[in-house]
Length: 313
Image 1 (cartoon, helix red, strand yellow):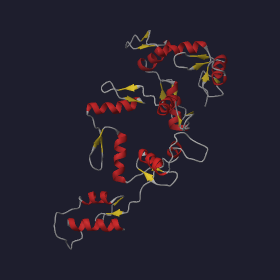
Image 2: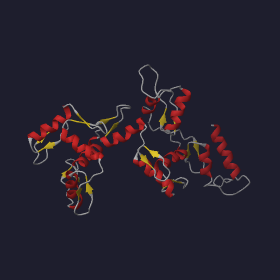
Image 3: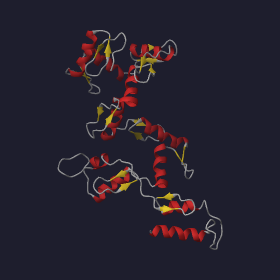
């Protein structure tokens, strides 16, 4: 990472640049020094006492620094300064040296480079070793292991691990179903639910069992298969030769399509199941009750007979 103009001193650990050597040295200590100051509210530790005091403000509702332009309040003066520069002045001083895109915040630039250019994911989960490009995503992911569900629906009291899950849930109360299936027109509240539904049409089964190779449309089905068929009841990785559910799931999220062996003899389109082919054939049906010699005009009995032949193959 090249040093920024006016900031010639670069951290040897993360590449962050500073105007002064002393500032750079103080920053480098955050990578190696012992964190002796602990927050008594959340347990987070810090190297310097001023950093702990700044952090403790995040546990308080006090926001003494108010923006004169819009009235928004902040817990720290630095946050107010950054807000004023980015939102009201429109400044974007941080530029990507790879594509030229500019950002108002340095952390946004760093995240942009990781996601768009380098693919770097320095934040690793200690439980399943899944990696993330930013610490916030890692913290959200870790909640899936701890069972922590801090986001509560004010309407029904249900709790969620992530804010996104709560937002999806709220659509149930509002009656929204913005995601429409392009195959059958059925609508869903969540894009993930639509994705799972579409697999009924495409035959896609991306979740493969590591032990026997059988594929499933959903992780839930794969997990149930592992528990019932392979007796993998442990939830943590093991070195005793017995695969845990976590190990099996993490190594088998490859996309695998089921062979589409049911072919429509009218248009040549193929399908994974006889049921899907049968539904498709209704598009070609001419309502006749008796068989026809005209292959381009099949009756319902002929179509159903043809489906049976395909199924036996």
